Length: 187
Image (cartoon, rainbow, N blue to C red; front, side, top):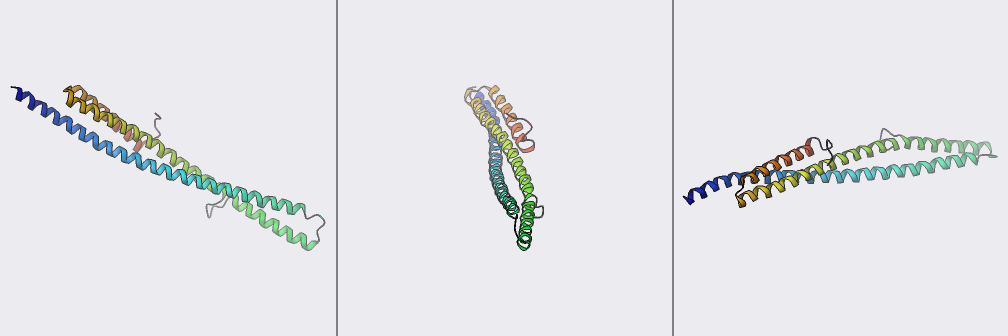
């Protein structure tokens, strides 16, 4: 008779073991998603930082060129006609360069374009960081679900397996948010 109870316990344990295996699979997928999102967020953060540094360098160079043009314009007083014409050509060239550095759509390296590209990289970074957090919360739910489901085997309390399954559903929902809508909620 005791053997029959033992066999029934194994049948229940097989179901819980299968639940734990499924939870472990989803845990692995959530961890992979988290790592991928984290790596992409770091890459986009570096890209944004590089673009802002380029933007800053362009701003400094633009300010220097504009200052040179203004200084040359002030120094033209009393200059002869040939020197004045040469200085005016140089001032025009400097101003043209400064204007080109403000917006250069052909190369995407004007200040406006750099700013837009940096903001776009920051937006992707922020989205990927939100995804990373959702995957991490999902992973935590899966880990706790595995522990709770495992405890049902040790204690023989089937309600713990149900609790583990519910935590697994929460983990699946959080991981799904990480994939489909990472910025929908903020935890």
